[in-house]
Amino acid sequence: MEVVKERILLTPEMAQEFLAINNPKNRKIRQTKVNSIAQDILAGRWDERLAYIQDPLMIDTDGVFQNGQHRCLAVIKAGRPVWTYIERNVPPEIFELLDGGTARIAADFLDVPNKNNVAALAKIICAVEDGDAPLASALLGKLDAKTLTTRTQVIEKVNSDAEYIQQFVRAGQRIGLYLFNKKTYAATALFLIDYVGRGDVMERFVFEASQMSTSSQPINAMRTYVSKCMANKNYKTDSKWLISCILYTYEAFRSDTEVHQFNKLNNIFSKYDKYVFEKRKAIREGE
Image 1 (spheres, rainbow, N blue to C red):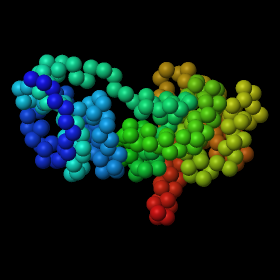
Image 2 (cartoon, rainbow, N blue to C red):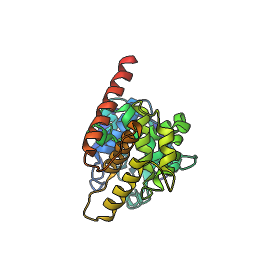
Image 3 (tube, rainbow, N blue to C red):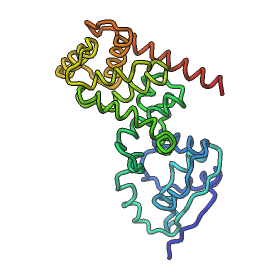
Image 4 (cartoon, rainbow, N blue to C red):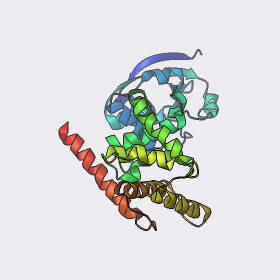
């Protein structure tokens, strides 16, 4: 039998019918993937062309649904139909070949300088600007407790605000050279400073922090502290910790005070969490 590809309007009812004949050997459902696709559908970001190019629904010659379970569940969750593509009469053995490649990430679709760092920061910016998650979750790209920013959101953000994102990426690269090359963390901290309206001395801060020798006591103290902690294998060093170090240092730099110990990192992070919440609220009330 000849394989037939056609464009269909996948309704929630049709999705239920496909799932009723789903291959029981299909991989375990990833709810975050379902949520991600449903988000794109509800936000009008669904692009049927991807289904045509690389990922059509599939039904084999035995009448078994071989590919598209996450899409079907997302359509049901969103409660909206979408146009997509389906291939019928595929050979049953095609199942062994599905999902064998490496999934493309947002950076693979971008044609901009520093695309990996740009995509990573864009994901966080989307979560901070569009979500309601606490800052610690937003730094992981989470819009809420369960939902991550989608690949499509990240691509759209870069396409619409490329230069805005690039300015933090470039500045983060300069600072990151002296912070164990943690460029994206540095870029994220600078974005947060700007987002909450505290960037009045950020240009001077970036200049000082990007110098091998700096006259700034807070910046020298941060470098020494970070170096010591990174050398300690038993010390937990993650994105929240390093971003907190930069924010803490920036606030001392901004107020022209010296730093002798970094023992209030949770306090500064809590302050910025509050700043972000207030900024989100102000923006949404003004819409």
